[in-house]
Length: 149
Image (tube, rainbow, N blue to C red; front, side, top):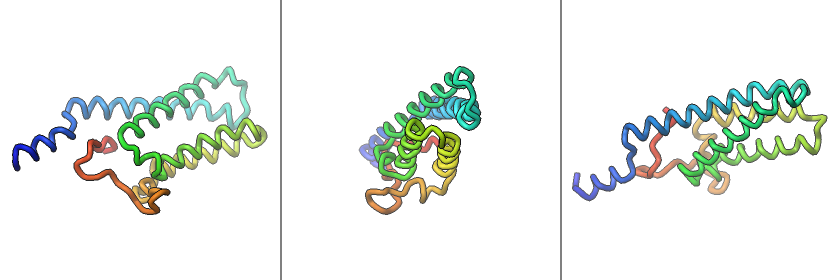
């Protein structure tokens, strides 16, 4: 390996320490998001008093925005891949609750089910680009290091 190619490889790789910091921060934010969603779910589905669940809902929304920001920062492709597009569909569905509040439980359950497919669906589904109409992955040697395992 030449000195130039070694420099280019190191330019985009993460140090072990930075990798673990990013990995743990992503996992912590996701854990807070799941906690917020889980606890606020009862409020949405069973029409409970907002005072019981509103702070948990705010935690879910704030942590969700943080996760979106991380994804967009790591890869602009996220915006046109199904995992990004469906995240915006989820947000639109949640916003639609204000227009059809009588459907709040059904909309919320739909959003929860979409979340499972986004998070746990096959990579070919999550990385499908609606713009290119094919699966898109990060280019090899890009600045992204896999933080998902």
